[in-house]
Length: 614
Image (cartoon, rainbow, N blue to C red):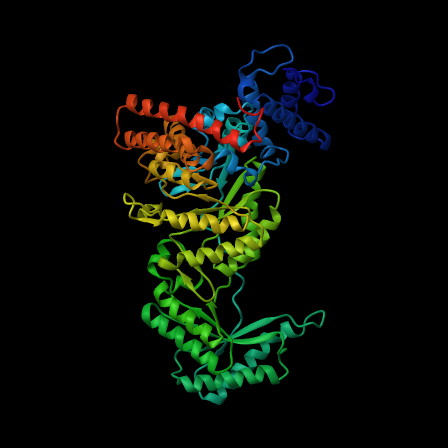
């Protein structure tokens, strides 16, 4: 294949391009023009590489054709120099048509198994029938993640480069830029202390403090007051009665509204209450809400002690850092009844959190990925709303997929959604997603070390959702135009079930991987006993079962349904019972043959693929 048309003006051959790059790289100081020439030369390398990927890499080297080995190495170098693919790409997972091509399958890997994943993807029945191989129709993704002892963690530039040269133009790529968000907080709201001592003297000191705190926000440069909340806190060494505290709060509220020190329309007073832990913390929070309500205040900020089980997991949403779900529920209900907003003293800076998410997702997009997943934990639902709104606006033409972790539940301003209430929390989360035009999401589990799995079956009692609940969630999301991905310890038998449900896609890693000795890339991981490496057989069989499950539930394939069910069950049984490889291969071959016939029947009855399948 001739490549002359792809070369920059003045370059007439591959050796000339290589020579130009080497000469420019050796220069320590380059002019602006030389910097541009080098970047253009590297972009040309990546363009040529994209035109040579796939079967064309095995073509014989002729005059004017780039040597494949050299091209791959220089493409890797160009990718790292440019910090990604060098030019924006329009490929996005939200454009994958799972109704036509069946559920999408993602496999986590840091790039070492790129060729294995590619080979398995291109040998499945569906891929073999397609005349033209395109990532958006193959429907298999290398999910860019390192598999450490702690779980799936971020990849770096060298792994991205390996994934790029091994996948681009042939299968999709995706990544999870972070399970847990790095929260940033605003400065704490100003606090005025009511000191110990006689009531009138303490009141005067508190009033003086209020005037000082409100002044900068009242007398602004443009003369327009800035909104502000100032919180009142009682010195704990002053043993004041509840009635006395309420009276002081009333006096301070009246002073702020009538004393000319604040703008009643934009400035407000709240109560800040220290709490301890357990039942005593709950009771202190309830009392603070009652006092604020009695004094006519509508805001209570709690400062407490982080729970021990929370500390082990870094953080939880909002007040769940201080109060367990069963203790926080009554607090939120009391606050709602009294018309009081209760929150931690630390307020999340959602604008900064959103920008941190953007930087990670933008890297994933620049690296040529079709999807970037990002966790929304430990945000409250109200904070999720603010962050997702911004992120979606920045990636409206790409697939930025927020993640909901079933085993963590959710927290709103008025309710805790855990245990049996998780489905209600997920529904509210989906309402937020739908408002902001998100088109792809992921439902997953976070604490996999505790044995939680996504799907609950007789063999997986620690599963979080029944098959009917998965179907219900999928339908709720679909009505909002949302495509749902699923992950969380999905087993080989469950792959077939997800296929039958016709879901948009799933992620499977452990079930398709084999253990191998820990290599240099993971050597520093102190608790990793063995690496998980995806295998050809595992990936191929998972994709085969996913396709068979999908086709077995389609009306267009009624004649094949019983056979697909029977043959899939036989393959699963052989795999799970660790039968001989000969028996597994035999069951695999028979299922592959029937799945191929089912695809032909499915596409023929649906129409629209004439000329695109063999």
